[in-house]
Length: 264
Image 1 (tube, one colour):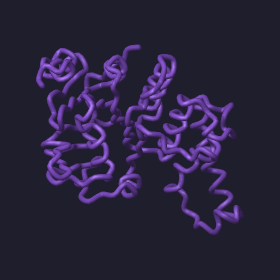
Image 2 (cartoon, rainbow, N blue to C red):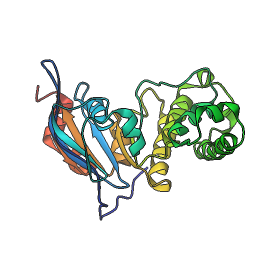
Image 3 (spheres, one colour):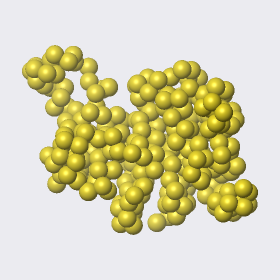
């Protein structure tokens, strides 16, 4: 698989400026800066403990950095919590699945539509009138996602009964149900076999190209990163040590040293 990368970048959707985050004496991030263009796939890579997940947690409001700022859609975001980030168009998958295992695939993905629902809880519970009509519209959208992810055969199956690779696909579907402007993927291929990784890589590319969704992803498989990413930022012990096109990053001595352990 190879990705045809555009020569001309779009406008900046997300800008991370001099972000620092510490937990007591542990410096998770140290003055990290990078930007994300509209419609690109931006990868964040680095050894274990590099600060990658901490960076995603800052972007979607789980953590508030002690220094620096995040600008999204041209607006500086201060003290943003995850609910506000979701309402602004940032959705996320997690390395550890947080699905409702006893609920069906359809119902799990429907939970991603909650922020889009306008009728009150009572009307939704009664499943009558405006509540019923709104739910049918949202179900139609969710059915489109199910078709897109090729999980039609499992739509009524409890998620806990599905193989791991399909559960990861459901997790992606729930994030897509929010119709995000920015999709954060935390190791979407972790624990997958080769065939499952190839399928997920294809879906990530299709989400980017067909939905036009901007994607920031963390991934340890360097083959996947180099194939599907437009640009790559590299973290090591909370510091940025590389940033650029995949080939530039692949040939950076700083990056080679970090992954081989030479620098430490």
